[in-house]
Image 1 (tube, rainbow, N blue to C red):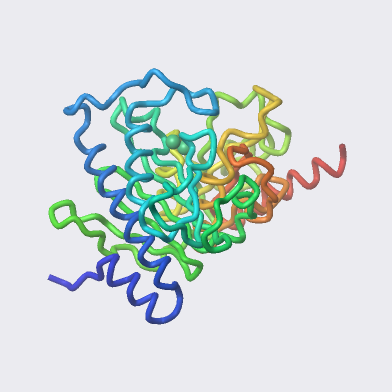
Image 2 (cartoon, rainbow, N blue to C red):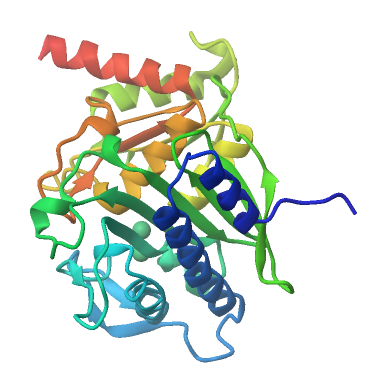
Length: 337
Ligand code: MG
Ligand code: MG
């Protein structure tokens, strides 16, 4: 059999080339361990009675699935003792999570969505874990402000996809690499080196049921895609919508496309649907490292100065030429307002 590079080997080699330091390499291995536990849990389906809603809500007012809570515990317990982190932020916790006083605090911050797409759990569709790593002052007890760094400051980001196979997609700022979990051996192996998003596409992903609430730039962009070869695009488009961010992004990383979750007037007070700190930012870092773009339509995602740890943002990501096209429609629209 062809020799495959394990995640441990890959991280060690990155460390030898001084691309990541020792703390970060060790932290990445610990994150991988937590994700293997979540992978095992999700692969069991409801055999252990873990499907369904819990009796609590998260800060966004969403009912937490039982698996949301268990996955959050796995992440917290796999990372709190390591000495590499000063604190953590999770989608499932209103406030940043402190490192227990019995353990040393390190110089990194971890922000994560322990189980993305968890509304898909009960229908057995792909879910995932998304994580983002930022730096902070060594040993501090971080405040909200310490977490509120621009996405451009991330030192590492990744997501794990619990689909027919479990995959880890990772960037430390030198491109994007994909690893597949060998379930028997319990190790991730490099299966998709140097992932790249094609600059053009004929596939878009958007929740069409919100169409009447969209702003004009999105209306125009999607109308032109649907006109296909009869319209100014001169080519036919296909539509995809899995309603699971990690699954959409993985598809775009492997065969291209554009994903749009825009601002809309359905709930005008909400800036967007997806969360900036532990969904949009890590995904944007990965997408840009793979040669794609990620914006809100009006601003590059990684340039946003965050205001709150659970802030929501509109998200447009994927093929460079398509994101640029839609961004230019926003620019024209805003210029005429
Ligand atoms: Mg999520
Ligand atoms: Mg989640």
